Image (cartoon, rainbow, N blue to C red; front, side):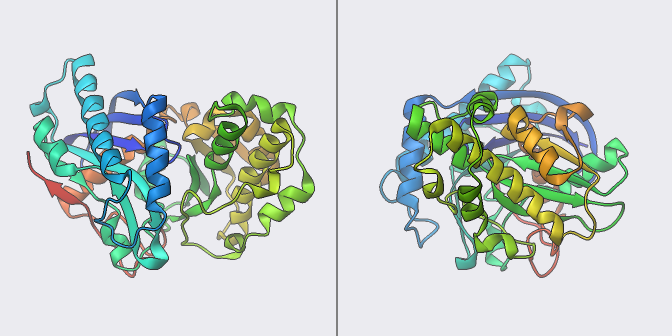
Length: 365
């Protein structure tokens, strides 16, 4: 068993999650502490500029506009996150076998065999003095896979560890929402379902400057606009069968531009819930249980809408003793261990890659 730290900076741009686990890459022996290093407003603004500048990228190694500065920020923020984490829990770098460093996704266009996660893995390994696995999505996309969702094999390990009977859906609601369908020993099926928090966050930032509908409060006060919701659900993505994946900016907020803030928030939240439910038609069997993790697990309005749209039991990761907020960081710790062992990270039923495929780039300190 190896001690691994996982790092995740998601498309919601809230900060860096840190998590320690003990694993052999097949099962999880134990979960250690977790941590979080938030981005401040200035850092978040730089990352938003980088996302805009990345929209026209064709070369995954290019860093035009704000991307070079943003990459330095991402590397520094992740280094700080790990250093603070080690200090907080009286851990030494030599006690950690590997770091799994996802980086910050700035563009994801698998149809063009392009995915870019900024962050200098080699520099991070040197600074921390810990070997680091990074650039984990690139091999899958280069081989024709979707490069996302990337953590279904970890979701499967969690469900097996909990002894849950299937079919179970593990739903991660970050900037984009993704689901893993798990049933006994059948291969997991996974895909991005549609928007997660990104549309809601961007809408609230535009209207209020807050960048979040905290606890779904605005949506709870608003009314869903059925016509606007229908226009949003008309997107052709929802008719596609998995495996499939999305970029953070794949959907437009134009349909709610004329609505009051609370009604717009309600409609976009309903859009996330309905787009999740739309995946049920593409699964072998409807999940009896949905386990929600990521930032969306903290939104009770979204959880209520998900229960209504899916007609199933909807619970949060915490209900099973999992960490909703740090679960993806834990996943990238798990994937780093798998990468070191040469075990597959992605599968035909999760990303559409032709055969199970390992990946990641190892940087030595």
